[in-house]
Length: 297
Image (cartoon, rainbow, N blue to C red):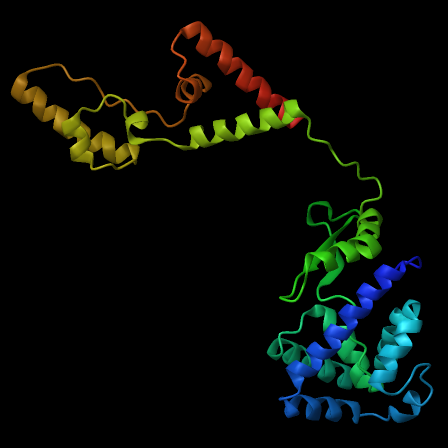
């Protein structure tokens, strides 16, 4: 958390802590097994002597009141919990991590509760999360060799937009700048926006290959025979058999089945704009090609 915090921000965090404190007891109160498991883990090693030197109160109500006057020390409390955890044996740490993971899943507690529960086990004091959602820095998958990071956010049912705004102001924005220090946000100009919208429309038209477009020279009887199949080989085979029979019966010359597997920019122009004159079609098709080139720059 940044050092500079307004009174309004401080009060907002206090409200979240109070709510999370109530949320924790509301979810765990009817789960006596949860507290037995925590007590078992806490008693695995002698933590009492360590707890005696803790620099904060030993009751939860006093803890919240104390935090109200010492907001800057919130992270230090969790650091103490993690430090005590590091002094435990590897076997006990692994068992505690496994137990906490199981209970977080049972109680629908997000990753933001992990340090809180570790501190609860090691110090006996509940230090609720200051947010109801989790965010962390992760490596950018498309740039493995660099030090660039992304901010990953996991929301909970209790998360509000105001809480996200507060976290954005106090921490997330700073994390973003740290992960991408040389990032320059691109502004979407009106011209680029229009090009993008038109390119999306072009992509949609190109991907919509109707049966009539793919096989333009089939007659109605042949379309009934192929029953809408879009496999060129199947259509050619069925239509060719039909045309061979018609040639034998009516002694007429039959053209081969014509197949089109993709649309040209000219086809797109006709479908989007209904332009019929060849010179207009060519002109508009050239413009569409230029739009695609600009989007790649």
